[in-house]
Length: 67
Image 1 (cartoon, rainbow, N blue to C red):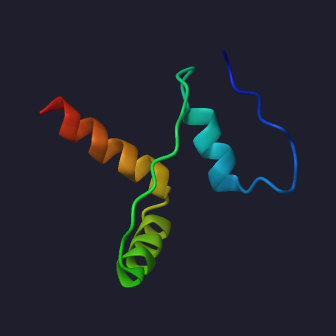
Image 2: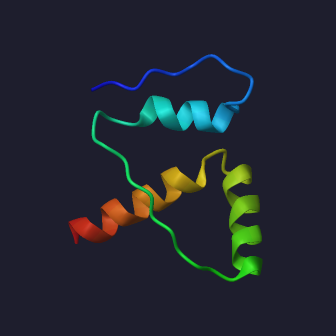
């Protein structure tokens, strides 16, 4: 099942990019609690690195699982 991206002003560039990178695998939500200061620092760093939090966490999880 392929995801179709709606052309809408509500979807920002990061979300649209993340949706394009998603494979046909079903995605689920992962909720974690982190201190607010870490979340703010993370958001700044991912913007500087031109990525998304989702991609960053997925890469870390894939690396962790593969070990």
